[in-house]
Image (cartoon, rainbow, N blue to C red):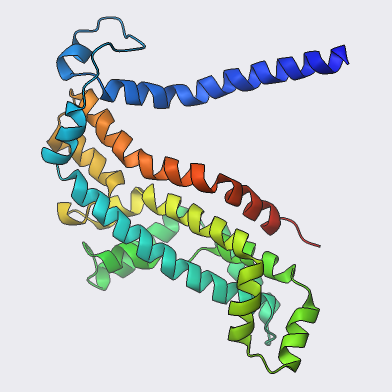
Length: 277
């Protein structure tokens, strides 16, 4: 009993230490955002607290730079990309998991092989395609290359195959069509995995940087990820770190809240999608 208690104590101490290490950057970011520009610059030795917090930096984040516009653009990009990707992934996964057609295994193998391609190669190909289509500096140009994910299709396919075949055969006997079976049986049963995919895609879209930075050069279409660089270069300036931290806090809050609300769903969906049998 004493050894078990000692091991648990050591484990909790290590976990607490690791939590402090992980959470400290977030604490420092929030703390810096609550300091005035003059107070921050007057600190020769960084302090770990402030006696005179101010929300001036948060006000400046929305008044001096178009942060609200960046947030709206990111919301539009995230909602439409996630919605289209979810529909495409569900339909593709259902086709590979339940439908029978010639060459299905070969097609799925080739489909999975796309995961082996370097991201840089895909980005270059997408950039040339979108540019030739005249979709640069537009929401379709931002959204279209992000509406397919091989990994999410694979995850859903494995989850769909966990549902017993008897349900599908019974539904066919009752005259239920494939689409109706998908919507009324598979989707409700596999809801945790679908929710997980939606959440992960939202996080992916919110943090997207390389593609939005490459395909847009007009401020009207900047997302928060590449808009924050514009804030640093032409907004607050390189030296106004507190204002920059306030903008980063505002950008980070939606994802933090989303994760805290759905963290259990994420773990449940990943476990269900990764377990077969």
